[in-house]
Length: 110
Image (cartoon, rainbow, N blue to C red; front, side, top):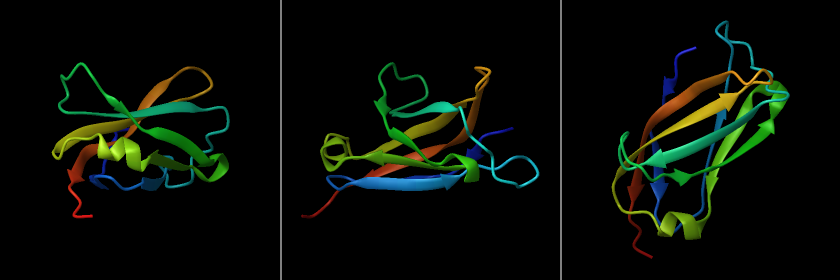
């Protein structure tokens, strides 16, 4: 399965949450029972440091996952474009990148 490109917008200094529904190749929901995963963003693909998202399995049987950052975490981000991806690991330890894209951090006024 190739990673699906999805760009996201993060408001600096605000709580951030985005939900994704992961599907099989035939369009049916991916049952993620027993899966683990991770999601990080970096300033570039070759950057040595990363910012981890909190990855929650909202509903494993319907393929629903969520990425979140707290307002404190977004406040610490530079105003810029990052790259990010989500890796899922199945019960057999097979790793798949399911979502990837740009994460734009926009400044706030308040």
